[in-house]
Image (cartoon, rainbow, N blue to C red; front, side, top):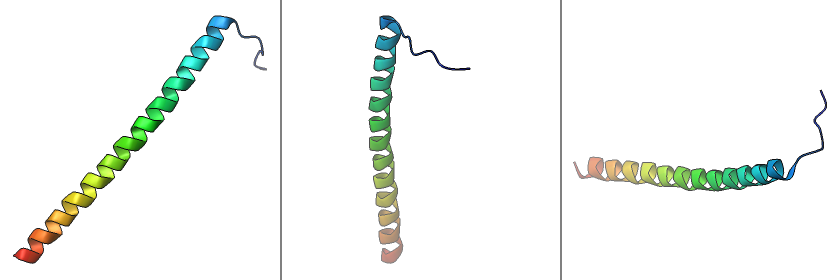
Length: 54
């Protein structure tokens, strides 16, 4: 079934808001993933340091 090319203004506005929200969520997810990576690296660095001290 073909998608209609006719959208009313409220549909267009909703679509734009959803696209904006999606972009913001993608950016937030990227920052959170970077934080998790940093935490993971930091924890393993501390573990290796403690092992070498013992």
